[in-house]
Image (cartoon, rainbow, N blue to C red; front, side, top):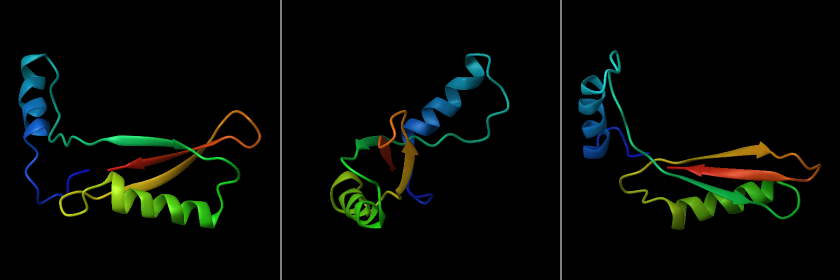
Length: 86
């Protein structure tokens, strides 16, 4: 997500359009992006550290964006998806 101090024109455009479309009561909208990475093998501390590094150096523009890394366990016994949201 964009850092709070960074102007978000896309989010503002969505926020202004919502009442015109009949959606009331939304105080703020922030636009973001999400990457989903499927990990081979277990999602251990080393894998999470590597994914955090990928997000920090490649997926997110850390000058203007914050990011988080989340793990979601998939349907298979060893399946896991890692979501890097910025």
